[in-house]
Length: 352
Image (cartoon, rainbow, N blue to C red; front, side):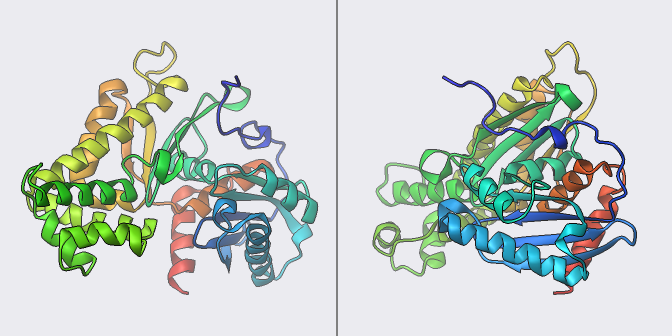
């Protein structure tokens, strides 16, 4: 059995490259609902965007995914007024269980300078700047990825990311499902009373909790629709509903177990003889908008293993992580400041 990391990092993204004369790099963030491409002019600090449809192969298939990726990329290149050959490197970070097929298709359509990685790699770069640390994603689904060491000694490791049937602990979908279950236990009097019951009826526009349950199967409710209910759970948790608060405690515990597993595997835990310095654990995704009710127990459990972890939400969008990695791949890793890149991306996306 192969017991190596579930996600590999190309050497060009971890080992220092010779300084290049590159002016343009591209980053792409491809997901199950949309694709965002960005070309960055390193000389003028200007950003050009391109948009496309879903590019998660699991959701739309390889052919449609590649079409969306290349369409968004070409739109960004055209907006920059350059040729694709002027790109020093392009990093395409794509959601899905396996990106190898997409990587082969993209390379055959473009060049080897177009690097395809799993989307958790861009999230990690957004959270850490491409250095030792961990990214924890909790949106509709959840996933954790981190890297210990640097250069040739880089140690990547991923935990989670198995989808809504086999994983997604601590995600919006997980919280939504658990909230509906809690409402059902309230309805049948096998569990404690909770305001989640009335909230579920209002949110899903159903006359009873049992009708909500039926709609899960007969409509059926999508992952996104179920995940959206977690917003109501967070409101009730803030208002003091004991069941809602316990769900966030439990979700934090499950997600923290995954984060701690990554921290230990990459050698950043308190017991590691070579690690006593602070390192980031970046929180990315809509589930963390719940705030302290989720983040505080999560941080507590992480610090029990790694007191030097600097836990906090990430400001830089994942496409920014792809851009950072693209700059590193062509030897310009020091040319981008994370805070400046965050401002550029925010300004470009908010102007659309």
